[in-house]
Each structure stands twice: as structure tokens, then as C-alpha cells.
Amino acid sequence: MLLIRPLSQGDLDDLHGMTEKAGKGLTSLPPNRDLLSRKIARSEATFQEKCEPEAGFYMFALEDSAQKKCVGVSGIEARVGLDEVWYNYRLSTTVNASRELGVHVKTPTLHLTNDMTDTSEICSLLLADTHRQGGNGLLLSRARFLFMADFRQLFSEKVFAEMRGESDSEGRSPLWDALGRRFFDMDFSEADFLSGMGNKSFIAELMPKYPIYLPLLPESAREVVGQVHENTRPALKMLQAEGFNFNGLVDIFDAGPVVEAFIHNIRAVRESFKRHVLVSRQPVNMDVPPEERVMISNRSFRDFRVTTIPASCIKPDTVSIPAEVAEALQVSSGDLVRLSPLKDAAGTRKPARS
Image (cartoon, rainbow, N blue to C red):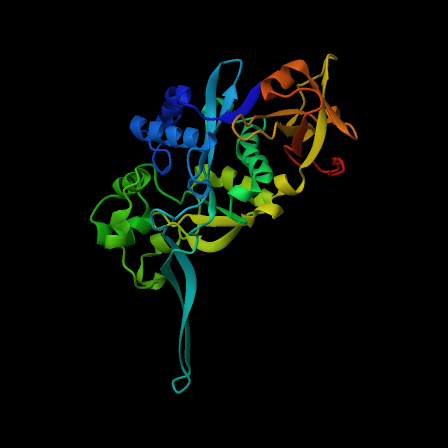
């Protein structure tokens, strides 16, 4: 069984192993044990309600119960930019015109902004190579939205995600080589690593504050603005299916796009519904394809749990689940759970919301 739960310090070895295999460019999860341990500790403190809600950081583990190991992680930052300034470039247009000369020129530009300050961010999505099939990525990503659906007061109305931008096999970013390197005098990988480690003050100190005129940059840099890394395209596709759209902002290091959505418009939230649990002793065929499965959440804050069950388990007023699933979710008959389709399938009839 695959189960979503809060990440713990016992998952550190598994998490570190995944980050070492992830390659360069995963800014939020660099392969540094001390940093990863601090992130886990911060997440544990959040789930234990030892910090202010706006400072919350939630990390979820995808656990393979058969292997007894963590095979994926995903996260939510309750608010960004409250303790450190949050930077993005906004892609916009500057118009220069002269009626006398008959000149009207539109120039694409990048403006340094702090527009996402005080907004919730979904982040830190990482799945082990061994489990990148069967809808596991969907579960890891979408389970976060079930948590947000039940604890809306902890998050902003809008949520965003920064997507990894294009870079080559050596981790070099065309935008950084053309722009950032001229002001920071360091390689992209070093700047990216420092940012991931939380050392972001150098951005404010060294980043140019004036608009960047894109035609002044080489074509290789212009071409990657707003583009995602090849390895990130499946994650972007998943978010687009949830209702996320490009908001005109890009990352200041690699120009990866920022996508956003209002929580109430996110598909997993919009299509979720509640049912009372009925623990059944009858055998259930759990081996069904992703489009015939639904996510089921126990709606607990400290002991949040999500797994998947066949859609056939859903009844008009109840959801009938096997005893082993109830034990994994830490629920009993009569408890109210939240459900949402794992994956839309053409012609699949959705249960009535409640």
C-alpha cells in the first residue's frame, strides 16, 4: 500500500538518497543532510502546532508500506516572503513610440518583483525513480490539495508553484550565463545552491533593480524564458490539469514559469466530497487502474493520511473500506473522510458532492 503522511526524521536517509539522484536544479531539496534535517524538523514543528500558522511548512511523505520506506515527498509553504524577501521577474512589455517619426516599438522586459509575497506555495515535489508509474506522482501531488481543502484557514486564497527552468546536463542555465552571472560572478549551480540553503540576502544586494530588456540578451537566453526543464514537464502537466496557469512571473535564476490557481478552483478541491466510513470485512479488489481509483483522506491535521481505494467502494452516504485501509488511515466506522478522484477518465461518472 502507498500512503501519504507527514514526513519525519526517520525518513532522512531515504530523502537524502532521493535528492542525490535528482541531479542539479532541485533548489528546494539540495542533497545536504543538515539542511534536509532542518526542513523535516520545521515540518514536524508545524504539524505539532509549535509555530505561527503563517510560518507553517508542511512536508508529506509517500510511504511504500511493503518496502517500509519513503519513496517520495511533496510540500506546502504556508506563506512566502514574510521573513525573507521573495523575488521573481515579471515578464512584461515596454512601449516606446514617436508620433513624429512614426515609430511604435514593443519591447519585452523583465521587472524584478515581490508579487507573490504572503502567498501559499506548493513545492519540493520529488518521487523515486522506482515509483514513477501507476498514478503515484498524481497521488503525491494532489494529496496536498485535500489537506488544503480541510484547513483552508491556514493558507492564502491563491496558491502558486515555481517550475524548474531549462538547464543543460551540467546544470548551466542560459539565462543565468547571460544575465545573473554578470552581477553575481558565480556559476548557476552555486547561486542555486546558496538560494536553496536559505542564503538569499545576496539576491537583494546584487540583483539589478532596473528592467532587463530581453532583446539585449542572446537568443539562447531569450528562448528559455518561461520554459520548463524536460524533467519537470510531467509535474507542470499535472498542475495544469488541476487548473494552474502561468501568471507572467518567472524564476530569477533559470526563468522557469510560475503557475498559480485559487484554492477553490483547484480540481482536486472542487471535485472532493465527504462520506462516512464503513469498515468492511468483505474482500475488495484493490488492483484497479488510476482512473478507477479515488483518494481518501482521514481529514486529521497532526496525523494526516491519504491513500487510494477503488471508486466502487463509494456508496450514496458511506464509503466502504477494508480493515487494513482503515488501519492505515487511522479511521473507524462512522468517521467522516474526504474523497476526490485520483485521475479523471472520459465518461467516468463522479459521485454527488456533499
